[in-house]
Image 1 (tube, rainbow, N blue to C red):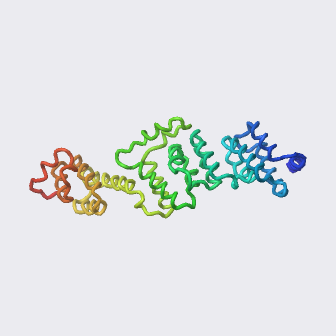
Image 2: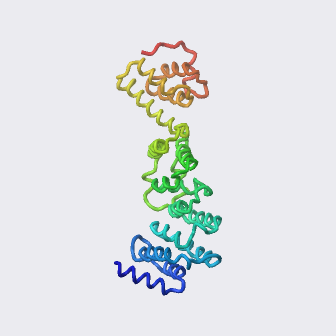
Image 3: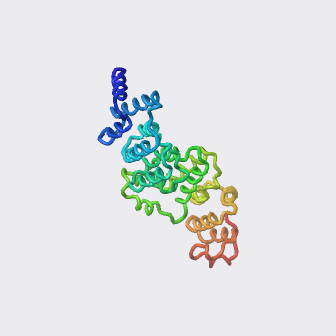
Length: 305
């Protein structure tokens, strides 16, 4: 292997323009799938350039090389991004040109490539967060998304708020998915709001963020607990009324949405009479009551047993 490296270094030294030569190689290459000869060439050239810093291109010549490189990056394996960025000093390229290129990748459906390049060049603050990350969420590319928001409180909060928006009552993830039918893989089978909620709670803990960022996700978790308690009380009959009532009130507190959900569930689990008692307890108005319950509200309350 050392012999091959030495031959490569001698070859680079004999080239009039190693930077342009590598771009020619990239243009013609079909070896983009991962580690291979192309990877060795790129890494060896990166090493060779470090010892020939005075020969590096600059000015208009460098800009031309950078423009050529951008046309190759869309096909480039993720492992080659960092050495290519270093070889062609892409961090010095025109910022707006880089942003335009990343947006172009998104338009082409290459969201993972767009995200990885954005991470390498620190472009995230000036990119539309949902444009990049929604398709990655749908494809279950959480490792890429977490790398995308790493170190940025604002981006982490945006991610949690996005996940929370998927738990708003009436939201259908399948409606969103229709916009991304061309995405590869079997991702529709993996994506559902329950899975996203689990992701959200993990990220809240990971980033030490306030759960208040996700009010709708919290509501869904509390709703699940209410259903569990209703089953224990009215199906299994394994909880006393006093114990059950204390648990219910400690969960719901002054959350009107949960109050309404409880009353609706009680109609099914315990009947209109019990549901009316809790509706009166929370002073719920007629418009927020299930059908048929409003007429029961004026009847004398019978203590629940």
